Length: 71
Image 1 (cartoon, rainbow, N blue to C red):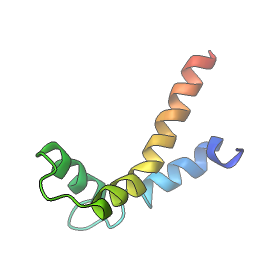
Image 2 (image 1 turned 45 degrees about the vertical axis):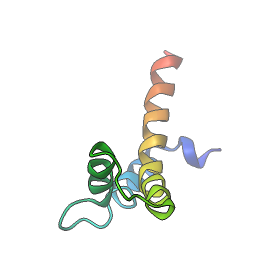
Image 3 (image 1 turned 90 degrees about the horizontal axis):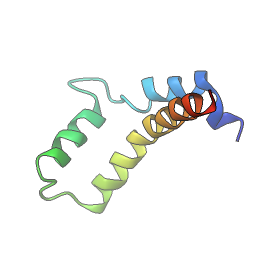
Image 4 (image 1 turned 180 degrees about the vertical axis):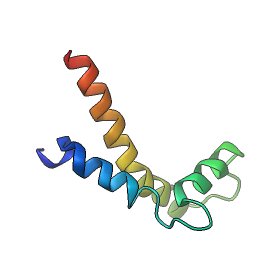
């Protein structure tokens, strides 16, 4: 539980796993565009890949929310 509450680790995950591969565009950006475009022909592997690359951002949103609720 201590690891997922560590700001440094979560930000590091967002910058590495969340954005990998970096070129020509971050992978998560392409997946979000695909979903926003209707998710046509998206298979289970694509949804898992979106969850995998998006998980660090979910942790970051959770930490931000947790810090505002605590105050």
